Image (cartoon, one colour):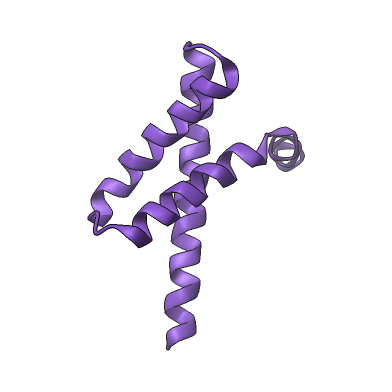
Length: 89
C-alpha cells in the first residue's frame, strides 16, 4: 500500500514547478562555473522563490513545496549530467 500512496502523491504533484526549477538550475549550471557544492543551495533558493510566486505568500507549505521541487530538480539535473557523461564514453 505504501507504494500506491507514493505513486498517487507523485501523480497529484505539480510537475511543472519542478521542471521549471530543473531547467533554471541546468541553464545556470551550463552558463556559469558555479561549483557543484552550491547547486543544491541554488536549487532550493529557486524552488522556494517559485513556490512563493505560485502560492502567493510564505508559510510552511510554501517552504515544503519549494524544497520538494528543488530536490526533484537536483535529481533531474544529476540524471541529465550522468546521461550526458555516459553518452560521451
